[in-house]
Length: 372
Image (cartoon, rainbow, N blue to C red; front, side):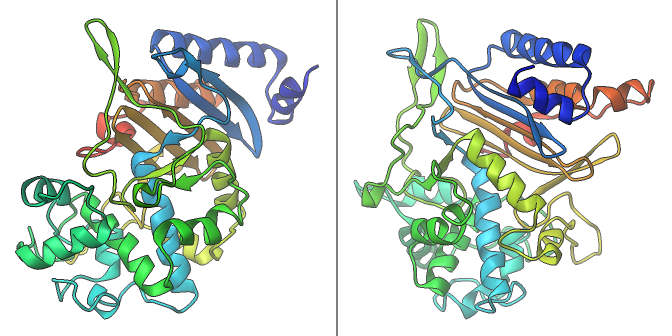
């Protein structure tokens, strides 16, 4: 028995299940024309970890286990954790006003928590920067902040009264991290998260400093003649809502860190996974940096991503200590694939509960909200 089969046996799969497990996943990959990395684990054991296709379609450069993918909004799970780490260290409090740490912040009624759980009401920075940023260089987070200060755009709603997925909020959180820590966002993430977890293939794209992944995949989209590379976005200089590049293997280290309460206390991790409560006491399916879901009886914390040809999904199934990690770079909708792979992972539970309807994965849940 090879090492992979031994690990699957340790996870409680029979020889017949081992064969069916691999066969079904490969069938799904082929039918969905998947290109990228997939890692599946359960009970602390990796059951499937393979790469497919090309990191650069122009010269058929293959995807390897070291190929780094733009995580898009999975980045938000790291940004939120960095904020909670500063909270744990007593350097900020999540229920304090953002203006307490960024004095020039143009809204005096938004708390750090509002930014974390998308209840701030701030407007979409992409729309604003596309219309009001007229310099040739890419705007960065401080440029975005100054633009909001200059324009004094109104809030879409009173903070805490509604949920509206906000990339702007997480870009502001990256600035908050910099102001409180005294470090640039990429440096803070490397020193306090990536390095301690030995995530050596993970970094924040920092265009202004020339910090780019050494083994990056490129985002592509389909055309009539084949595939075309998606060029750099004018928003790629802004970090916190997106911008981290990583691998499936490094994201599994992230999963294990969460499972073993590294970086944060178990109380804070659980706090991050609690559904946020609105002013009217209704709850929303978002915590602090995490979407919240259920599949069968499995509690799930996860985040999807979509940006510049990349489609990504990171799911942690809390009750069974399982992980599903999908990183793709060919702009294909992965929602159906996420749903199908969940059914493979929990095939026993589904077989033991015939007739129970399975919640379908939506595009918003599996591939991000709004633009990513």
